[in-house]
Image 1 (cartoon, rainbow, N blue to C red):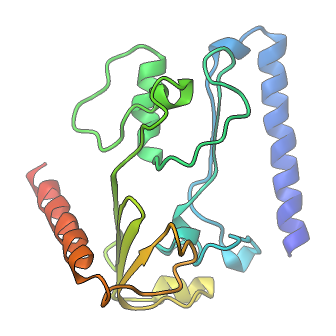
Image 2 (cartoon, rainbow, N blue to C red):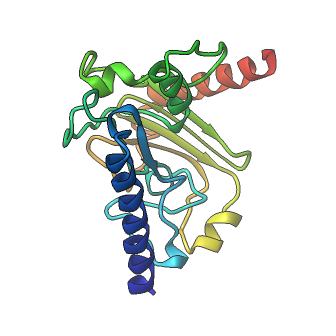
Length: 206
């Protein structure tokens, strides 16, 4: 199963290479922003491996949230540079608008990360990110992440052991989300719960 999965990725890489070669041959490479991103973390039933990250697709553990993001734009984005900044797929739309020099619509949750990509603002990132699937929620502020769950139905399909209730962790020291720090840091727990509640209320206002 794992070999089959990796074989699919191999042929995906070949097809991406064909597109890039075409852009080179037609002289369009430096005028084209190429964006490669996963839609979710790897799914364990189809033999994906999320490394040290806990969870899988359909969960709000880091194994379900963190995805590869590769952006190539010769002459504008420095090649080979790695960034650990916290960004989101929501940032792609305003970033593409900025690259195309068209106005960015209002009331977007995403932000233009072109200054990060060009190196103009290397510290640019989201201070807070929030997820809410109805049965599971997550709030991330800096290194702190609060994840809550009231159902593990989707996790069971992925073969993932999903802890119900409230789970607070420090991602800097525990990227695998192994230790629940909710009781040890009630102030941070309360702050992140308030952040989520305010976000939900703001959605109703929109």
